[in-house]
Amino acid sequence: MAGEAVLREDLRLWMDGLLDAERFRDYCPNGLQVEGRERIRRIVCGVTASQALIEAGIARGADALLVHHGWFWKAEDGRVTGFRKQRMARLLAHDISLFAYHLPLDAHPELGNNAQLAARLGWTVTGRFAEQDIGFVGIPSAPTSVAGLAVRIERELGRRPLLVGDPDRAVARIAWCSGGAQGYFEDALATAADVFVTGEISEQTVHLARETGMAFLSAGHHATERHGVIALGQRVRQHFGIDCEFVDIDNPV
Image 1 (spheres, rainbow, N blue to C red):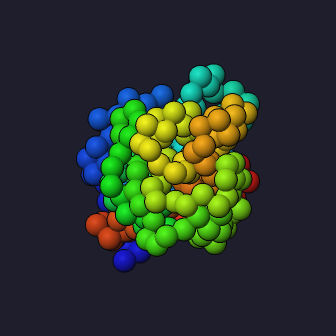
Image 2 (image 1 turned 120 degrees about the vertical axis):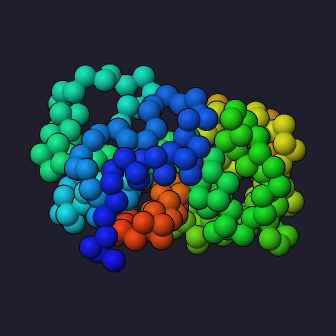
Image 3 (image 1 turned 90 degrees about the vertical axis):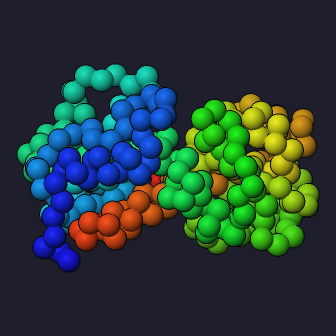
């Protein structure tokens, strides 16, 4: 199927519609962020549009990059200088498009990072919470403790979570939100879950966990957000018959 091609605009419209990108209030533009060649035969997928991923795309002859974290981070200086110039120059020199989906790829009920976490960890989704229904609530596949949940997460994601709270607490209900969602801790408390799982932790989060009794697992921003873009790339390949390869540029955060 390597000879198949899709028009860049057809791919954009299809992915925007699939992920309902227009619905989300986000700090960055979702969809096509850098325009490359018109016809796309090969896509390299990754978590973040870093220089390393760009170079991997060039080495693999990619026509487009598909990522969760594109450019234009929150409160970022938008001037194209320094490392921004270097990234942009490499993409433009090789006529490579950049597609990025941030909140739409967290929230999608099947392909999103949170849905994919549930699928990998055997959790049944029972509800949503937080702004724009980004967070998920569910139940584990079998009785477990917070410590047992941490062991399962480490096995599936390849990273040991930081655990704050009682490791022996029984887990009947889980709240989770991938990436840097520690700010949703109070929203998670309102779900009456036994534990909140996310990617990052802040200083004040530790105190909230200790004082409220809800356990907190910080499982890694990158580690919790690999599988959404993998699932999206697989769906693109199935629908259009083009080559989509995931390249994991490891990140310890």
